[in-house]
Length: 593
Image (cartoon, rainbow, N blue to C red; front, side):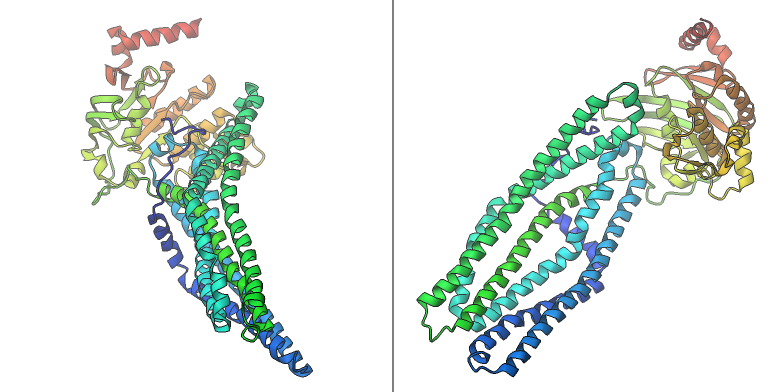
């Protein structure tokens, strides 16, 4: 699909939907108690700090004119205490909110990871891995502070404004109205830029996602890049993506900068107006110099919360762009899941039936149409045919990695869409074409197939697939540490370890998708001896392009034209002289040549 590219921007949501923020409150509610404590501490800190201008007014208007030295020392000491206590309370509150922020990150990230584990293959088919990773890591980090400190600070700054306004009006009503005169101008500026600002941060999230997706893709494919000397070309692509990100970031930052710029200028104009009005327009008998100083201090304090609120607004707009992406991921439907009242699949014999099955990855482009086949328990089935015909699709449908578009697939008479995924897949052994190796020891990689397996069982599985010999050649043997994707192992070694992992599960249905494609001929012959023993009594589906590996299967099915074009044993299909005969003959000629 087109969206499965690093340079395709994701759709922007417009207008802003408040539902994202309401959903975020679920994570905030779980931290309600520490947030209440933090808010109380913040309110106390702010209230104590607001007493400082009143102390200053009293000192200027009363204590200093009276030349009372001892009271002056007392008032100065009290002012120092208010500052120390206010800072101390604010520090405790900061520590509490740091912990709250990390707890919120933990909860969101855990929910995201859990949901990603349940999403079907199709979700990952349609998206670059980098665009998924950035949501779990970067975006969650970006919203945590807004969801923790941001909420409390928003409420606190509103309370501060109310407190400051009350103190201002208690000192002088007329000068208080001068301070409030700048608010309409500020609100008009906010209304003018809010939509553009939000869409600018949405664009930033898109460009960041694109850059991260390409970076992840480039690191994963670094060997191919160096083989084909694509370094300069890739550097050019990354430079373009990075430049796009920088351009959108600077554009969004310009909108952000407009708000503090406006607040600073309005605060300066208002402060100057207080001294101008207080000294020139009002009666000096009504407005003392101490009152003017106190109102000047309150003017600064009044616009400081507004500046803080504007910064919070900037952070909120930024966070909303990321919240949209986070909740978009959480809302991604788990299309392959247990239906209501799904039953446990009992221990199976391995009879598999396709009844008029139709399947399409994308609507209107069927890969299989009206496919009907019956496989008896214990049969070995080979699936052959041209690339893209649907061989892997058939085994993926048996494992229910995708839902069929139409028809029914059943195992031992049980519709697999009506049983739990765990009970279905736990009785199947699946080895895909991509032999993925996890970081950890070789022993841990094999045990991934059955977590309760003993070391003896793991070694027995490795011996069956001829992996034991090369594993013991390592200095640490089964305790050898391997990197993610097994970069220090050969492709054949990775495939044998994956094989041992699959066989360890002791499945009733075994699926081998190009299982021996990276193994040399000698190892393949040895492996085949173990496989012959393993396949006895199990239903198996084997996909292989080397037809010599499937000659002994009970039935060979040639997949073509959205279904099974030919079916029979090797001898029967060779006698038929059809598609399989031509394919086998062509391979034989290539080998002999």
